[in-house]
Image 1 (cartoon, rainbow, N blue to C red):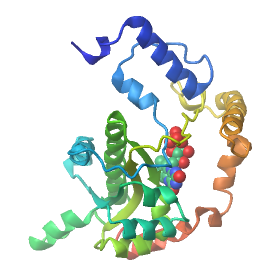
Image 2 (cartoon, rainbow, N blue to C red):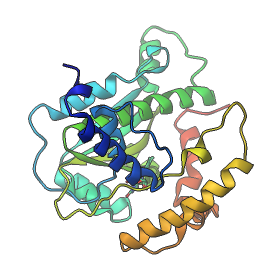
Image 3 (tube, protein in one colour):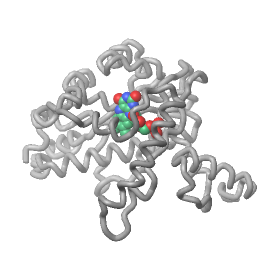
Image 4 (cartoon, rainbow, N blue to C red):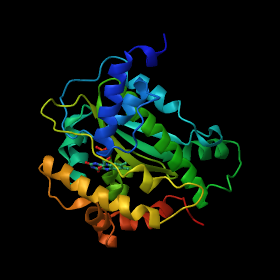
Length: 284
Ligand SMILES: Cc1cc2nc3c(=O)[nH]c(=O)nc-3n(C[C@H](O)[C@H](O)[C@H](O)COP(=O)(O)O)c2cc1C
C-alpha cells in the first residue's frame, strides 16, 4: 500500500490543513490535496536549538548520508564532502567560535558540509592534467550547489527519523580557523555546519511561518509590485509568531533588512571573497 493511503482521508486532511496553517498562518493556499508523509515531514520542519545527549540510533548517520548522496549533483561530479565531528572538546571549541551557540556543543553530531573541488583536482594532478575550469566562479557555484542539495536531503532524512537539525552558517565567520581545524586542503571550503540529534523535550521550537506563495511565486514574469501587499501581511504574522515565542517583536522586514544593513553585519564573512580566493577558488 502506498504510504499516502496509509491514513484515513479526514486524518490526512487535518494534518495537511494544520501544517499549512502553521506554515502560512493564512487560508492561502486553501488546498490540502495531494498529501503524503513526505510532504508532512517537509512542512513540519523547524530548526532545533536544544538537544538531548542521546546518541543517534544505530545506522541513522549512514542512512542520512545515503539520503544526502542521493541528491542530484551537477554532472555527477559529487563535488562535496562532509566532516563528522563527535569529539565533545572539539564541538565545545566550535560552539565558542560560533558566538557561543550552545546547540553546537549539545548535539551529539556536528556535520560540516564542504564544497569540495580538491578531490577532482587531486585526481587531475595524479594524471598530469590541469582543470582549467576550477578557478572560475561557476566551479564554486557548482560545488556550493552540490553541498547545499546534499545537506538539505540530510535534513529531511533526519527529520523523517524524528531527529532535529539546525544549520550553522557561522562556520563561515571563522572560515580560516574552521578550514585549518578540519585540515581542509586548498579547493575544499566549509559552507555551513549542521547540528544533528534528538530534540530536547523542553525545546520550544515551533513551525516558523513563511511568506505567502503570492510573494514568492511569479506567473510568467517577475513582479516586485505583486509582492508588496503579501509582504506587509507577513510582517504582521511574523510579529504574532515572535510574540508567541517570547522574542523581540520587530517583524520580518526590519529583521531581514538589519541582517544585511552593513558589511559588518556579515560578522566576519565580509572577508570571505579574499579568503576563498586564497584557497585557489574564484580567481575569475
Ligand atoms: C545556511 C543557513 C545558515 C544558518 N545558520 C544558523 C546559525 O548559525 N545559527 C542558528 O541558530 N540558525 C541558523 N540557521 C537557521 C535559520 O535561522 C532558520 O532556518 C530560519 O530562521 C527559519 O527557521 P526554521 O528553520 O525553524 O523554519 C541557518 C539556516 C541556513 C539555511
